[in-house]
Amino acid sequence: MDLKLKDKVVVISGAAGHRGSIGEVMMRAIAREGAIPAIIDRNARGFGYVEELQAEGVDASFFQTDVTKPEQIKAAVEGVVAKYGRIDVLINNVGVNDGVGLEGSYEDFMYSLQLNMVSYFLLAKHCLPQLKAAKGNILNIGSKVGYTGQGNTSGYAAAKGGVLALTREWAVDFVKWGGRSNAIIIAESWTPAYDTWINSLPNGKEKLKGIVEKIPLENRMTTPEEIANTAMFLISGCASHTTGQHVFCDGGYVHLDRSLLTQE
Image (cartoon, rainbow, N blue to C red; front, side, top):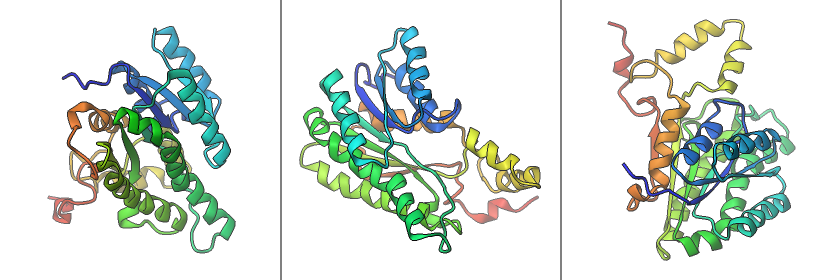
């Protein structure tokens, strides 16, 4: 299937994570589809990723940016426009489940919002003129925590809940100029960060087993590749009449009947 992404300029935040992270896998999927990934991330790892892609003949750019700094976001978007003259898609992918709960400080709570939600708003704001010109779209990467809660993570839960609301708010705003706004909701996905967390627990293997058993479809975690495939469809011309949607790529974790978890 031709996803009609060739030569589209796709701004993606949080794509300079470790190999196998959701952002890094999405970034490579963008490149495979013939689109141009413009990576916005604070980690210098992004320079190496771009060098790898360019060695493969892929046009790609990295704009090292701390997305908690508004002026850096503005400068990064200006850099993308200066280089390519257009932005067709924005993928907001930054997310850190930082454990800032009710006992956390005001400062830590506000930082969590700034990182996990305000950065989405600022990237959308600064990309908006180019998105309008291209009749482009935004894809926000969300979390089940915005729906279900998790416990002891008020900052992240508030931010991800806000991202879900913004996804639909922007879909309403974009109707007038033919743009789209959607979100992918992720539950349990095996990433380098997840691996680090599991291995930090004294009962990591048992914890992982208990989590996997609760995922209805095939009792396994969602892979970053599956999330990337869903993302490529949603940003593509093949999803041209899909907007304001929260698409769950979670193996049925959030919605399916709990009776599926009963051991036979």
